[in-house]
Length: 222
Ligand code: G3P
Image (cartoon, rainbow, N blue to C red; front, side, top):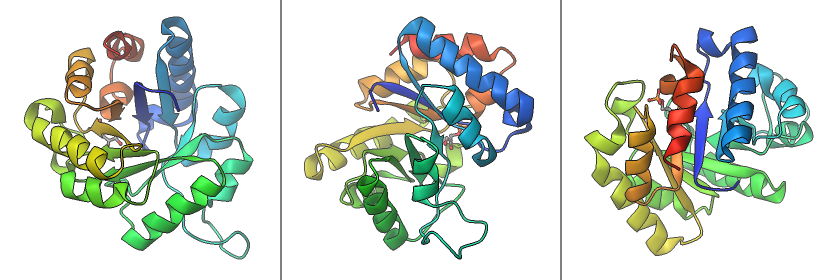
C-alpha cells in the first residue's frame, strides 16, 4: 500500500452499515481519485467481497482469524480475504485483541499470501515488540483516546514519536500509522510531522455529518 495514507476503519457503526456503508465506500473511492491521494478502507466484514469487486482503493479486513481453512465455522481466514481480492487486514485492533503468538502467525500467513498487514498496538513498547514480527504497518492507538474528541497527535504526541523511533531502530522497513481521535487535516499534518506515514481513523469520518468535506480536509494535508 502506498503512503502517506488515510486508512478508515468503518467498524460496525450504523452509519457504515448497509446502504450507508456503500455510500461511504463510494465517497472514499471518489475522493481518492479526485485528490490523487491514498485512501484505504476497512469496511464491515460483511461488505468485504462487494467492495473488493467494486472499488480499486485498498480494501482491508477489520480482523482475520488464525485458523485453518476447512472445518472452522464462522471464521474469516487470511485465505478467505485473499480469495476475494482484499489488499490486507488489520490485526489485533484494540477492540479485537488477540494473543501475541496469533499476531505473529497471522503476519506470517498474510505475508505468504502477499496481503498487507496493519498490526494495531496500544503504546510504543508494544509497537516495538510487534514490529519484530515484520508486519507492513504498525498502527499505534492509545485505547483511552479511541472514539474521543482529542486526537492522539495532541493528547499523546510522544506515543507516536516513540513508536516511530523504536520501530525504525529495530525494523526500519516497518511503517508506522497512528490513530485515536483523529478528525481533520491538522491532525494528519501533525501525525506526519511526528514521523507517521499516515493515520488510521474511524468516527471522525464515519460519524461526520458531511463525510465528503471531512475526507477532503484529511487528504489536504497528505
Ligand atoms: O481503528 C481506528 C480507531 O480505533 C480509531 O477510532 O474513532 O478514534 O478514529 P477513532
